[in-house]
Image 1 (cartoon, rainbow, N blue to C red):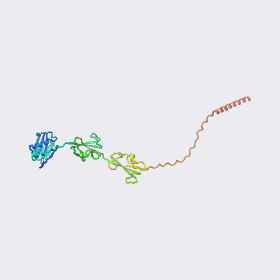
Image 2: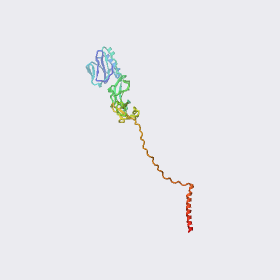
Image 3: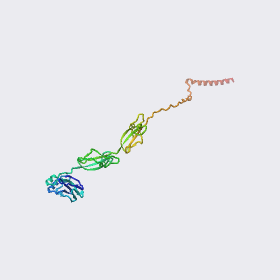
Image 4: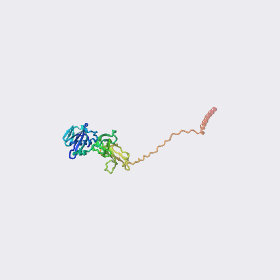
Length: 337
């Protein structure tokens, strides 16, 4: 027998080799339905098989009600030729379905097989952008999706709808992380991570000498450098190494053309041009006209140097002699009178 969960209807089998048997719980009662009426021994065989199924909760034989037949109804169950329809599925808890062979009680006992529902484990998918971190990281974590219950060793490869369940605008489709397919393990730790990367665009640099023309112009075009992938609205200012990547001899360092910094746009047209111009030789100026030398104007006459010590007595002597001469003339005039 195989354990099941609630549903609106359940397909049944009714052929020569095998026929369906269904056990469903409503309240504290277990309803065991079969295509054919079962003997007492067959009922006990069904009970012994059913009570060993996980989830039966130690059901007692006295709690079982056995019904049989097609095209009828019983307490909210409608049986047709190929299915059982439940009027209110929420009132029922399905525990087991299986098949039996109706030939004799001995054969029936042998043919009722225990196909109990294997233990299952929940699997969830966590979605991130830019980087896989943790559900506590609001900058990267986007949300969680519950994939349902799976048996151990089941394999899971997410489809396109599941991968893009939380896809942000401007990002590429989600990528399932880790080993693909994911292999379900026992326990509660079955988590599949999906990562979204921002959409990026290639940027190249074209190098020219003398004039920016086109890559088809061999006289001016020098080469191309691939800068890599960038997101829209990223800004780029080339450094010295990038500017001089194709610098010809005799030319000045390259100059980035257009707006600086360059702003990356969506699409394939992200091209930065660099231009080299010829380094001009320095031409010396003509010799200036000769000018006559300026006429030297002598300095003012220097003050007379003081007389030497040996010459200091001469003026004094002359003064004394002149005074004596004057006095002597006066005396001589008096005598003559």
